[in-house]
Image 1 (cartoon, rainbow, N blue to C red):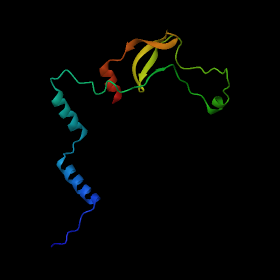
Image 2: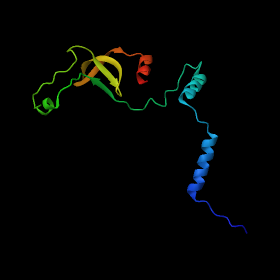
Image 3: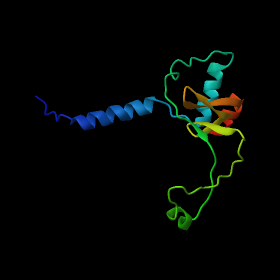
Image 4: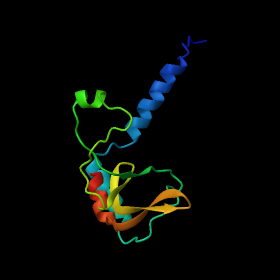
Length: 130
């Protein structure tokens, strides 16, 4: 009978992982993009069902300003902070921090809402991500 030394689970796992990584080709992002374009060329419909239920945060940007820490610590109830946006101008509508539209505030059933005035095109939205 031959003496066999059993391999520990981690050694076996490491060997399997090494074999898998050797069998799986590694691609640069440019190669993956060009391969995706080849697969999707001539295909107008994209299955968005996978992401349609993913929650996103929609927010309005009213304005902003820079103040000193001295001014910040001296704020009390009733203090007014002047912002950089002009009153009456459309506000920026952001989705997960990305500008997608501009709009005006409306009231819907005693709650605030936003009426979209100008929506950024899908191409411009994708360019903003890069």
